[in-house]
Each structure stands twice: as structure tokens, then as C-alpha cells.
Length: 309
Image 1 (spheres, rainbow, N blue to C red):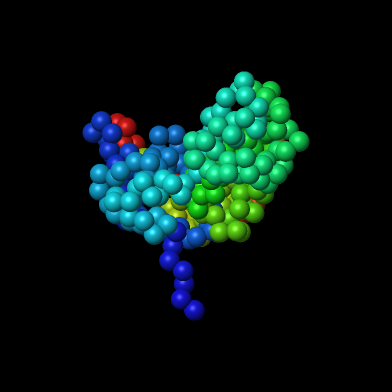
Image 2: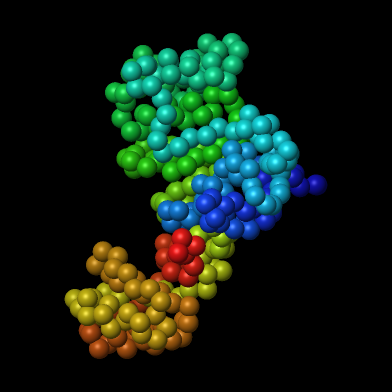
């Protein structure tokens, strides 16, 4: 059986602003129906990379196809198939939910607009709230309205830029359940996020730092390929242990996690020897632990070269 072509395949993407490369030779592939996570520090270029793939920006260099369209020659066709939702929900707060969606239906020239709006309200559980003013909604319901506006024209590709910022944990979980349901129906999703638990809900993740793609794959692949060893220290003298561990042989990162201390490094043998010695000297307990996605990303951030300088 022949594998379906990817929804997105790009190579060598480059984009500069003011003489600075914001996206630097990025190549990647995203399957149809895949939720692709984009992670990285603020200013890393992840949002610009997504916009290049969605036809919202033209690359200075590089090539590729999105939904079968060439990113350079057919950007307008790509944009017609994209739903775009940012962390700053864009709607009129003095209009109701239904009135906001009627406005969006008009912008997309959806016909019959009334049916598109009614179907979207029902689809996202907004029908009973359709007469509620958008400005009076909680963060979670505003998020749901923003999602409704983004998918009402039935896009094949959904771009989510920090979509759950400022939203409570239950609303975040409900939102992700909704996104997974859409992906199961064939919608391809690109999402940028700072939350590690959200990254772990993506099918594949891409870590971008200072314009360069430095890690890509499933969460398990990214953690495994990082080649890190992690140990955890517990006890009453953790501040002293942390002081001794920082800069010691084999130790790359030391970070408190609640009542424990996470110690991470690439040289596993050196790390284990150092941590065992410090734990014994300070009267703490040490045990080996699984490396977390957050451990990996902190390491990647420390390795990256800042292109702002």
C-alpha cells in the first residue's frame, strides 16, 4: 500500500527580518491528520516557521508544498485551506457569540452562512450560549469561540499559536480533546506551545531555537536522541547539594523540582559518580530517574547559539 504524501513537506526555509535570520535552513515533514508541536523560547522563530508553511509569509529561500500547493507560487490557495488561531482571541466583545460567527461567515463568503454558523455552534457546544456577549465569556469559552471561528470554513490545516495561554487546566484539557478529535478526522494541526504536557499530546514535536530546528520526532525519540542521564536527589540538604553540583564533572543542569533536585548531564558515568559523591557528602539520597521532556528542552536551550547578539 502506497503511503499518502505528507500534508507538509518543506526544505531549507530561510526568513530574515532587519538583517537577522529568524528562520535558518529549516526542513521538516508533517503527515496528514498529524498534530505537530512547535516548541522553543520566545523569539526562537517557531511562529515565523509556521507562518511560512501556512502561506502567510514568503520565504527568502527554501521550497516545499503544503496540502499539495507550492508554498511560493500557490500561497493564496494554501491560505484558503488554513484556520489560524492566536493566543489573542480576535472577536468583537460587544457582539454575541452568534453575531461574531455571522461576521466571520461573511468574511469567508460562506453560503448559506446561517447554516455554517448553526452547524459550528452545535459542533462546539455553543448553541445554548449563542446569545451571550463575547466579552462576558470566561477564558475557556473565549477559546472555544476562537476555535469555532477558525474552523467554521472547514480548513484542512489548523494553525494554533499558543492557543491555551491564560486558560484554566480543565479548559486546556477539553480543548486538546477537541483538537485530537479533529485530527482523527483528517485535519492537520500545527501548534506552538510552551507547556510540556501539551507538547506530549502532539504526535510529533519540533524544537526550534534561534531560528534552527534542533530536534524533531516523537516525544520518546526526542528524549532518547538527547542522550541525557538524569538523577534525582532527595533529603534535607538539597541547597548545599545544588551548590556543590553546579559546574561539577558530568553535570550540565541542576534544577529544584518541589522537594527534589533534578541533575542532568550528557556524560552519564561522570554524572552518576559526581552525584553519588555529593549525595553521600551532604546526607541526601540519590536515585536514577527517567529524563523528562523539560530536561531535554532546558539542555537544548543552553546549547543554542543566540542569533540576537
